Structures are given as structure tokens and as C-alpha cells.
Image 1 (cartoon, rainbow, N blue to C red):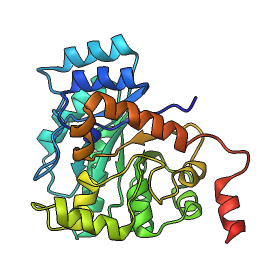
Image 2 (cartoon, rainbow, N blue to C red):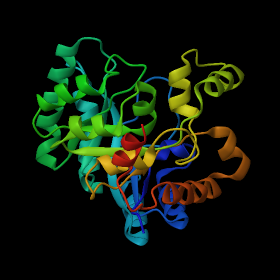
Image 3 (cartoon, rainbow, N blue to C red):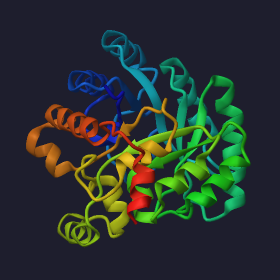
Image 4 (cartoon, rainbow, N blue to C red):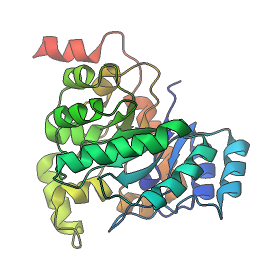
Length: 287
């Protein structure tokens, strides 16, 4: 059976303990958690802090779930070091091997300096920063992010199936550009572009950016969309555990968080079912 993880943005209204227990009941063996909340307008996902850490550790011990990643930190030269350091201390207690990183600044020098500084803080704790290429941010290019990451030894890349699809990045390009780097891998389904824009107009009343709305609340479950989840998986090392990140609040409200997690696990397991030949090679030979 494929090992799978789940990100809390998928069901952001659950607190960490309830999220861990619901994820375990749905069949997941891994989770990501928040220890530093993203700034600005973002989905919920209560943070793990000193106040609830022991309860979260108990829930992890009871269920046997492992933590794959923490947070989404906006990295730049002027990032909030005290806030991040506090979160890293909690992340270390959780046993997280990575911290997810985004970059909103258009100043690449600031991003490089911030990532290097975060490495200095995180790597001694056994935590690798993973910078994510995101379509609607200045770092919306996998080649650019790979270059930035290679300038900060110990850092890695977050590969998200949604953003790879919207950028037009192929599985082969993912394999080439991430070679030798630590990688975290998030999976989901992606709507047809016309349907996405129609849904955004209908549902995204408070979010003018269609791509940001899609990332925060317009994802499908793995295997439901037109993106190549299996091909991306084949492009990455065998020991990577995919994390489902598929927030879609209308569906969660319709079936409830626990059932949505069960559906997410079933969809991801089906989408990643092994095949007898490489999806990368088969797709390219067909084209």
C-alpha cells in the first residue's frame, strides 16, 4: 500500500488533535502541521504551540502518525526570526524533517538571504526548509526556485501538483530540476482552466486572484483532475511520501471533515496505484 500524508489546509477547521485522529481514521500514516501561522488571509488550521503540544504529541503517539512537514513561512531577509525560532522549537519536538517555505518578495537577493538564514536556524534542529514554486507569487518558476535552493545547502523544494500543472512543468523537468535535492511532494487534482475561472467568479467573492483562490479553496482530489499526479510521482525518489493538499470547502461542508479525509485517502491511493511501466516514458512515447 502507498504511504500517504495529509496537509491540514485540506480540512482547515479541525484543531491539530482532531485533525491527527481523523487523518488516522481515514487511513493516512503521515501529517503536516502548523507551528507558525501564515500571515494575511489564509485558511484556518490551528497552530501547534507550547499550550497544546503535549496533547498533540499524545495524539501522534496514540495513532502512530509521523509528521512530514510544518508551516508555511514567508522567507525574506526581514522575516520574523523570533516567531520562526519559536515555531522551529515546536517542530523539533514534533520530529518534523522539513518546514515549508514560500517567497512573496520580488527581491531575489532578499529571498536568498532569508533562505540561508532559515537554514542556519533550522538545519541544526534536523529540519530542512523546502521552498515552493507558486504560480501567483514572484517565485512562480521551478527553474528559478531550483537555482535559489541550490545556493542554500540543506534546503529543498516543495513540489505541488497544482502549481506544476499551471506552470506547464513536465514530470521529466521535475525529475531533472530536483535531482539531488530534498523534496516534499503535495498532490491534488486540478480543474479544467475554464471551469476554474467559472468557479472562482461564483465562489471567490473575497479573493480577486483566481490562481490564489484555486490554491486555497479550489482544488480537486488526486486523480479527479486533468493533471498528471502519477507521472510526477514517478519522477521523484521512491522514498517520498506524498501529502494530499486539496482544500475545497463546499465539499468539506457537504460531507463533513472526517468523510472528506476518507475520500481524499481513497482518491490518492487510487491515483498513485503502481503501473507496470514508467508514466514518464509512456506519456512521452505517446506524444
